[in-house]
Length: 280
Image 1 (cartoon, rainbow, N blue to C red):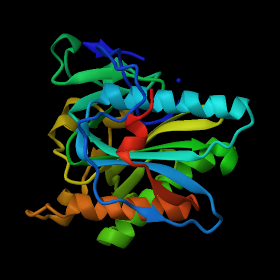
Image 2 (image 1 turned 30 degrees about the horizontal axis):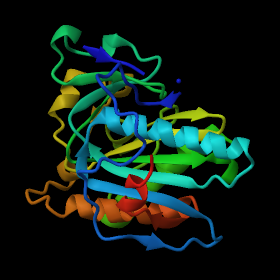
Image 3 (image 1 turned 135 degrees about the vertical axis):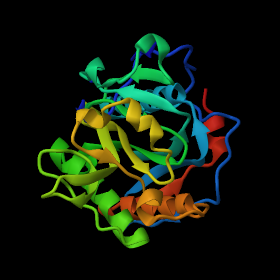
């Protein structure tokens, strides 16, 4: 059954069941040690760290939209509108972009292996699941550059730097495609390591990036990832050929925050759970 919720790149959803109307973080979740990074220009990003948690897709999606609504309200009243960053993992789920084709699903929708959501983001179908770090920047592009293509390239740059600095994996972009890839371009022996799909509304960008760290890649076989038939999906774990992957998530997470801060020239100000839970 497809669950539902407009759009650039490689993501999407279909309607969900009951979705909480609150914009607070799920009360059962716990954060890691607090992170604080000082930016060069004094601008900061509110950071919500759930990277060790499996968050239901519908909750995270609703949470993003609530934050977007808050930011739009701030802009309308000429108030400061800082950026927000959420990092988490999801329970297994397939998501579709606003214009995604069901032809890229290799299963009967009446017997789907996981929930399927169609959202307002751009792009085609992808999979989210444990071992995949999902980064949702909710960015006011007025604070950066009001150019969607620049924003997509900046997100790619974050991932390329993470793979290079933390794992010595020399990944790259592919002309005409959005995402981050590893392999031999001329022979089409490419593995997509990170999918990117965003929605921009009144210059507020949301949705984001999914980086395959220790992800089980089998669920990707039930779809045509990002609608690209001649490309494969890879993970950091599969490329490094490691059996012990206990530190890969932590290493990738720390590098992800550092590189995001540097690429977007933002300080990182982690939000305490209490400040979120106190919200109505």
